[in-house]
Image 1 (cartoon, rainbow, N blue to C red):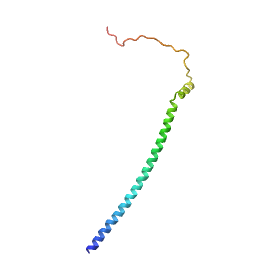
Image 2: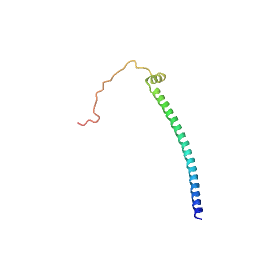
Image 3: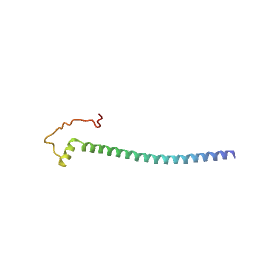
Length: 94
């Protein structure tokens, strides 16, 4: 009778361990797939970020700004004038 109880407890423990192993394996495979998707999304965002940095660099370059100014009708000044304005204090207290 004592051996039957030990066999039953051993069998129950072994069954619980096998079921637990299956549960953990399934959970890990799901987590692995989630991790793979996140890494793929990260790579896509890094590539998009690099592309946007290139767009910013191009749109703020001097040649690009000159083209935009020409398209808007801006012209280079023909004559530059400098005004000599004497500086005064903002609040004069005698």
